[in-house]
Image (cartoon, rainbow, N blue to C red; front, side, top):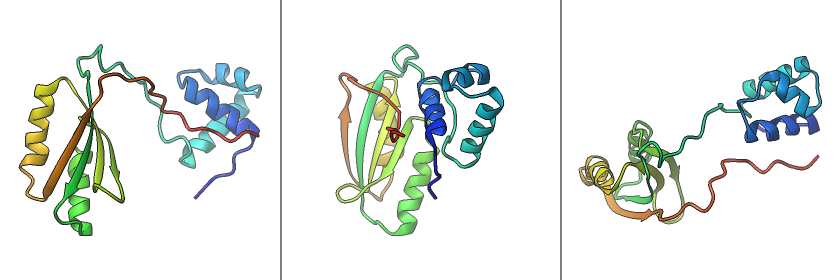
Length: 157
């Protein structure tokens, strides 16, 4: 269900995408609304699920998790129960940052963040190699991240 956002909502969302750590007072001032209006609107956007959550984006390299891998997974059996079982296993794995069911092509595309190639190999062994339903694994390793911007392009009002 899509929610209707007016210009004020869009300003608040844009500001929060830039810096979710702003206090309500700072956010209200930058959005040119009262603090009470700001708080009420942000709460409404959160309750509607427009704002899913607020997080800090950390530096993987500085924290020792500097290897990013984009992995395509093809399963032998694609029945609903097989897809769901594989997806649930991926959701439970901390190194799996993103998990997408895709079509056409592979069944899943995963974004993994691990310390190094040794950690990647261990993860592959535990998650994919021992899974009899995994038919094919194709991995791509990031050698340079040119852009990482987890922002939604908002409509102009």
